[in-house]
Length: 125
Image (tube, rainbow, N blue to C red; front, top):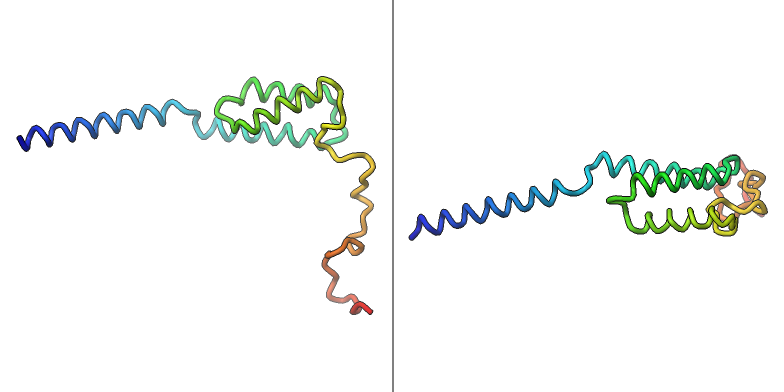
């Protein structure tokens, strides 16, 4: 009786181990996920580069959807589809790049509220 219980528990543990191994082995591997995240960030970065044409952005997002959407976060897949649709219609309002009215290069850091002041600056009056 004891040998039967022991053999059943070892069979169950082998079956459980086999099922676990099969589940882990069927998902995307780490390298694939890393490459997909890197490609997503590259496409996302192109959206902020004003020197890049919309055709290149569209090409990047469609290549990402075709090559890396398996195993990716569903939010990222939806974002990529929405960006591709916005670029296809030529709608610049949905672009991730900052608007041309916001000139961030000309901001004076000391004029920004809450910005750190240098130690050598005189105290405020």
